[in-house]
Amino acid sequence: LSLKQLNEYIFNSPQKASVTQQWSQSNCTDFTAYSNPDYQWDLVDCFLTVSHNSVANVLKFLEETVPNYKNLSYFDDWNGNGLTSMDLLAAGCQDVSFFNDVAFQAQSLIQMAQNEKFVTPKHVQTRSELLENQYDVVLSLQCVEHFERPLDYIDELMKIVKSDGLLCLSVDGFGWTPNESIGHFWTYYDKNNLPYTGKEMRKIVKKYLKENGFEMIKGACWNANPNVFKRT
Image (cartoon, rainbow, N blue to C red; front, side, top):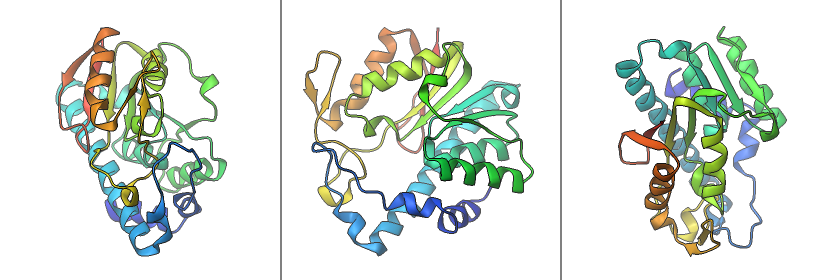
């Protein structure tokens, strides 16, 4: 799908409502940006562009290194409200699952896939449905920073990657101000309940993955060009 089609999808579907969702965590950074409609939709456009480019970079890497990449099993962990799944389907991937616990978003995504005559993606409604060693490729793009305890989330991702499978991971930048924050936290916590800031997250996540048997096979800028880790 073109970026234009993705923009039309989010602006002309019930997904638009999800963009205005307010967050209530006491440790969560301020969301005053959402009170400005013009700035709000600038954020959406930026969000779509980053998501679209992230998947393009992953697919390029897979095309160059994995001959049968279209036949692998993929898990899209709520990236771009499901728009990552659309990019995978548009590229010809035949086995795509996605997690989304917002019913109307999931229905909208499935309907769009059917309208485009793609393979229908599989909807994972709860994380309890996920199994160990289930997917060849797991994508978590711009998600980690939205968890107050990112390493607990990384545990969930590592568990569902098959042996020799791939974890494609990007983490948002951390030079934010209160008016530029979308679900980030001022303070994060590690496995020992010790606090750290967002600026330290990439280093901590990379170290944790290495300690748990994931080798980085594609290093990148972490943002719109995701890193790829292989489960060894």
